[in-house]
Length: 402
View 1 (cartoon, one colour):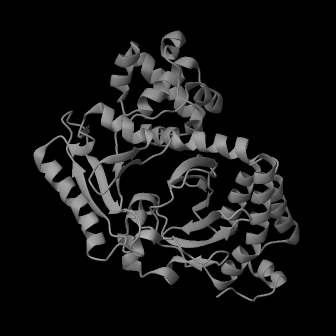
View 2: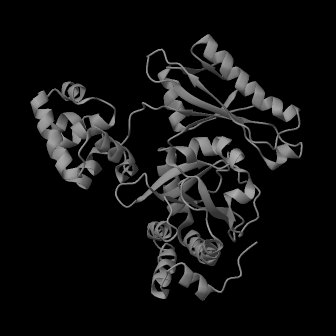
């Protein structure tokens, strides 16, 4: 049920001055001409709702499964910039919700159901996104935009006043995004999608009812191509080691079995780890049935999605943007990138063919410029800052810089 608290009272209880509210709404409408202005709005919402993440999930025409999302949150440097990711739209607990209606997660399911779901385990728990306030916004073209506001587990649940504040914002958010889509849908959203799909943090592999691979995202293709733990043989996904392969096959069979048992509407995930011949950290794998309304009604063909996380994959951050963002020299930039890719200082110095004392001097300068004191902090800001939004360094760039 939506709150009927008067708007003026909502603003007062939220501690929001009218000028601040007008600025927030203004940024939303400015995004009609420049979608980057929506980032300012998301950062304002994050502060207003005392959230650690605010996410806006968009939709791309002709892509029913993957949608770009804008995220303002703790994964970003400093106060939290905007990052862009791809969102596997069909793998969610929130399909079929009433549109234009504000909800909280505790209205939809119990806490045990929430923390045991694959959605929570894959996307929320790693970033401590426990409390959730959100709404699915119905757009004039029939698509749906999803707004999600999250808080850590230890913080208070969202109040009725905060629900009312969220409801006040929905019409403005809808109109701003609709205006943007009318002005520049193809160019803007197409560009956004092309950027986000290449930077997914989670590999996704979609299997049909015969176990045949029908779709791979770019991250999954890289993992398969490496032949280090997972491979595709005869069109089917297999693990390198027989014991892992038996467990993977069992999880896939279990997911399809739920359709035969009439439980297609239940989103139950099972997880395992896949050992790697290289000796690197095992791949984390989650398997679940992709629930659709057609499947629940006994129509359509079932599909299963296999999520894979590679904890040791190299980052694709840009050397140029890294240098510009932190005012690093070319040599300092190269060292920072090697450290971000998991090398120790000694290993990085060998890879770059520089003396260890030189590497230590570069590292001290990097610490001074980035404002960190430990190597682990440097790696964190390198991997989570806006440098990940730019393309990777070009071949030969390292050689040219030395």
